[in-house]
Length: 113
Length: 114
Image (cartoon, rainbow over all chains, first blue to last red; front, top):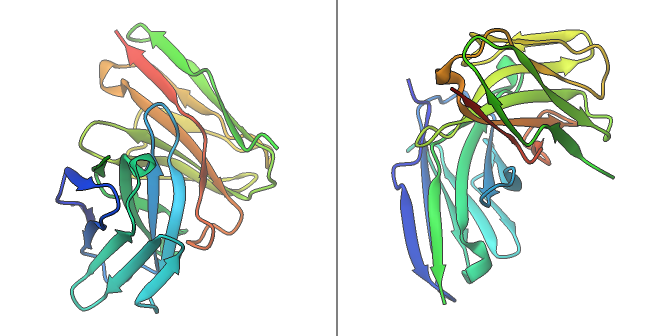
């Protein structure tokens, strides 16, 4: 039972344009949602998070939107840069279960220059 | 500040062998976790700990053992390696355990079981 789903295995975007990465979840009790970026041969790096009581969080070029009724969140990167090319993982956690992270399968983002 | 340190970076085991993957953090984080990453499956939680002396199972705990005798160290033991345990293993730690600040990950251990 996959609670966090990233249905797009890959995304290709031109430099300077917007990248939109999507994530769906099934558990309405999740308290926090997080995005991680991962380069090859490195560990994931925390990017941005959002509480379930908010609908938007912004940090520089990165904005995460949460639509609780649709059980959907998205990560917007504007403008996209070649250095953003990586695998992006969506993750969720629930306080009741020790805040364990549940990850999606990841989306490979390629930003073309 | 080293962050989260995992050793070794690479390991090849024969089926049936046992070994310990080491994880150490120097940030005084209470929360520590072990994940495995397999193609097309994201990261799956193996075991986690909310403090010294406290551990619990994650999504895929079978074949693995953990202990947390100190705040800094959280070793993962493979009891009898199987080819299905071929994977990349990540250790992570967090101060709050919540989405605020997230978890800090190590650089991983690539394990091959033949």
